[in-house]
Amino acid sequence: MENIRITLIEDHDLTRVGMRTALQQRGFNVIGEAANATDGLKLLESTAPDVAIVDIGLPDMDGIELTRRFKQTQTDSEGAAITETKVLILTLQDNEEVVLAAFGAGADSYCMKDVSLDSLAEALRVTHGGNSWIDPAIARVVLHQAGQNAPNGESPEAKTVAINAAAPEYNQIIEAYPLTERELEVLQLIVDGCSNASIAEKLYITVGTVKTHVRNILNKLCADDRTQAAVRALRSGLVG
Image 1 (cartoon, one colour):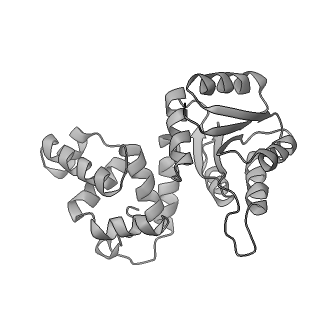
Image 2 (image 1 turned 90 degrees about the vertical axis):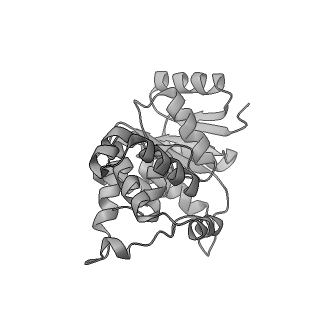
């Protein structure tokens, strides 16, 4: 059993039932469902799930506003989280404004509705583990925004490899095992969606060498795969 407690907030009955069935078959513990934001907010507050799957297109209040209100009620006077409930946004919308608004409201992860069930299960595990899972279809949107927010005039050499958005112990890992200049180049191309063969061609190195760099990057970023590495690169500002 996954032993991850899930709530589903989705107004489309067939979609909600289908997700519940699929997640239960994969061992997740679906502890509650709601078809609108009002009931969903009450459900989150009463059950405190590990991860809430929230649809943006709810009839009475969009999922972004629901996320914002829930997160506001789950912090103390100093802004520290009271509960560990994570929010995974599920939507058909991939435009920049919606994506950034979701993260601004406190969403932890963002999936497109056409995500495969296996990928959704992986997203839930990653989110429950305290990391963000960003659908590859919208990763470029967030990366573009991160690039826009970089200080004017900053040179590539001036970029830090510190993971400022991660836990202190993760910062210590990166400080102990910093990425080399070549690894940063490979990481940028991974974020751009390049295959190993394409990276080899662009950097004039062999595919075997690329694989070695990718393996080193995953190890240093404590990432399970290329998507996780890209997400952590985004959150840390390693690439622009």
